[in-house]
Image (cartoon, rainbow over all chains, first blue to last red; front, side, top):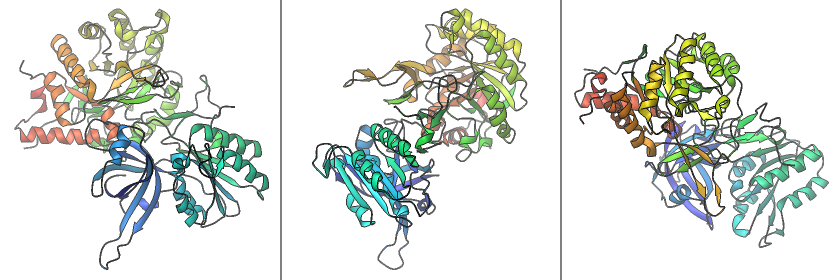
Length: 272
Length: 304
């Protein structure tokens, strides 16, 4: 659906990373974890295209005073990387945005018996909070989060408040373990009972490593991808990613926007 | 009184002049949630080739000021999958569907025109001649009047359906291209396709697009498109479909003044999936407000 959304709050949660809460239609809180929105940051022709953002959270705010209507909302966690996100970060509460969504295919939650392992890097945490919120209702959840420095490790307190056990690794050692988050992931997998289920979102290199780790151990793994896209609905074909059997002779490109952004890692082609 | 928006292009009766541009509207179905397809004049489906085509590696698109570059590489499902999976939807829509297609050789173009001609759900054909001719050293059909003449002649012989030729703007003289296509039997011309451009990532010292170059579209190209529509309209008697950066009803009406009988909305549908419908409604409103009873009275009515 397409709707006008009013900003409720827009806060810098870590240098360069912002969290925005905005109003949403009453059907919106039914969005699946992993789905995304396309946001138009203004009505002008520059920036021209909408920007895609993972849905960080959804909910319904019930005002304290009696008689006031409850307000469905959505939240986005975003990093300022260019002009569009720069303009977004300069907006204030009561400003209006044009939003399309929820779009795409979200995560499959799996069965309650499995241990759930979430792996996130930097702003890749954006779609993982709503996922964790759903997963903790049925299974124990562990989050492995990585970043270059402590500034890139976002919203850990929020995950901990859900009861998620968090493991942090930074490349410069400024928070948690020094190194890559995949090292902590491998150690955990070695002591897991039964087969866990992995959910990951973050930089491509991290996803590539996680997909490899999961494939070696035969662990079901879903990844949420990013892509340059114009439309978000499968028309522009800008955001495609090669499927497992893709070749030039037998093309198998999947649209990140419409076939994903969440894919079973085994469906995609990864670098060895 | 409600203004008359209907126009006729190459024997196609359109309820209004607004069409969607190939490659920006999928196969129609993708946009059904946002656009009532029966409020627009016609829609053009994603460009088809004989065999499925992988397209280019990514990144395939990048935004530029007032526009975007794309190098999708004509990824498409191919004619067989189109007939099997996409045509059934077209049956349910009472709006002309126009199939855009392209080939690597003149024979491929003719073969596609023949096969599309046999599909009752397809109201008309739009041939994309902005492709390299692999048998002639890769020269782009649409940049050489003789090549364009040959390929359009072959398509004309293969179909009795309305045949629209989509012109490339990447030429020295658009009028000579238009004349060659008219001489070869085109029923209408649509212009412009994207303008070839590029974007550079200064820090990485690399092109942004994996394909290096891409096609520029969006509001940035509108002045060039208007100029070309105007030039062609004065030189050729075929109906013209204006394309290039149309974002709203005013843009569309400017193309009609420049000489277009209809328009195609492209990049705008990416930003606002309901754009084509809104533009059609906005045109009606503008005509009513300005006392224009029939949109046809504005075609080529530019005072210059």
